[in-house]
Image 1 (tube, rainbow, N blue to C red):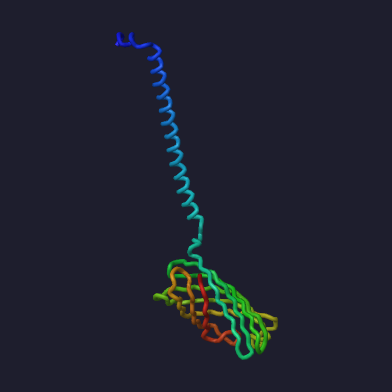
Image 2 (tube, one colour; image 1 turned 30 degrees about the horizontal axis):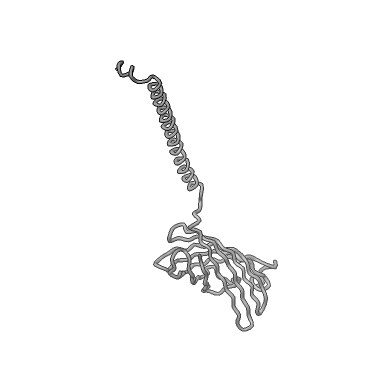
Length: 205
């Protein structure tokens, strides 16, 4: 080895040593950076997964399960006119059970002229294929001069109805479709503005 080294210029030995040390420094630096980046990436992925879990925990409602609906009615007959606009919002608690709330607005002109408005809450449960059981309660404001059988002295009073019945939804994909409901008011009296049974057609999407 001594003889060989004597025949190799010293500057080549030094140069090779320096190159080797320089390469080792580069390799060590690259390995160090890769280790740091790997650790950071794992932490970032864990943070993202944790953030998603927290969002799911904090989020009460799934937007994909929200359902919007509308009962709309426009009629002309024998000199009478009726306009009904009743939007609703529901939530699919399960694939079979829809629960929601709505507002009601009606304008009637005929033998007299009046405006009916109020709010409602409902639940609809899938019984068989496209057939549902429907339950609903509402509270609507009526004019006492036309309803109430003269029992109220104020201009308006609140009538509460409790409805049970069946509904049929057209077999469309997803949560939308046309819904035909036939409901019976089990608290019906002379104050009610509707006759039993109450038939409604609405669209949900």
